View 1 (tube, rainbow, N blue to C red):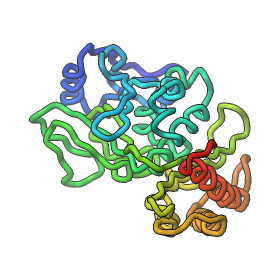
View 2 (cartoon, rainbow, N blue to C red):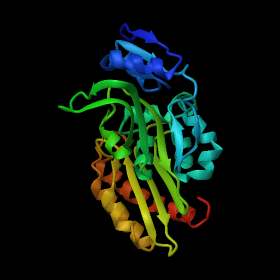
View 3 (cartoon, rainbow, N blue to C red):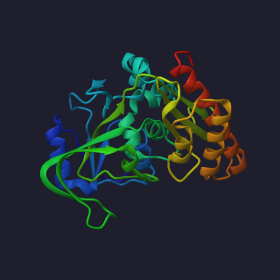
View 4 (spheres, rainbow, N blue to C red):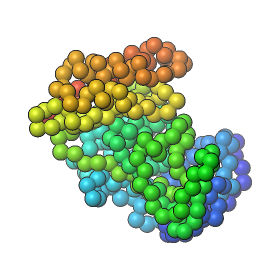
Length: 307
């Protein structure tokens, strides 16, 4: 099928893009990588009246360190993350997850921020960012009152919002982004003694996850766990942060038994569907196994070893 008719706009400045969003918000879809949007438009699952191509806007493709966090901007591609020396040096979970994203063609075009804004429950980046307690930055035109569809009385008067990833990811294919806002970057906290790992089961290279588990832990001077992050892919209605398992880890000395308990909690928290990729029981088993394995790999990295 062909997409339905739409206006195509390609602004060359951020201000121009925000002006379009302020004027046409509800009818606009943002085109960055387009790896999810274009297929949806061809199938007419998405029929935007306006396609806003942001690829000509300069200064939106950085991966760098800003004010104590790692910054990944809106036009940074998955492949840029794979190649980034900053990511390799600063964040093992992101560095390990990036090569698992789809296939080389998608990685060369798709963007991290676009994946988060799309919020497909089978997408890997949302789980990674939930485990890392990331934040996103949303920008809109100053002085314009914006309303969020489906949230009675919710409004925002222009400018910049910094949103925790948990507040940003609302539900399947749903975020707290206003129609008049542009997601410009994701911010990931830096750490001193930490490690992260992503485990993914897929039927073939480039496939969506049958099960994915992202973990991150940080250690204190006494080698106890001071911070923990666990998030699951493809086994719930949305990417799931397993806060009970995280709480069980914090303050404890790492051990195989502790990680096995976290795996049991994660397995009980998920709600996978039985399908051609496997039964719900099988997927729960893999969640537990991957959580335990991923935490062990995260610990090895945090202690100064290699994944």
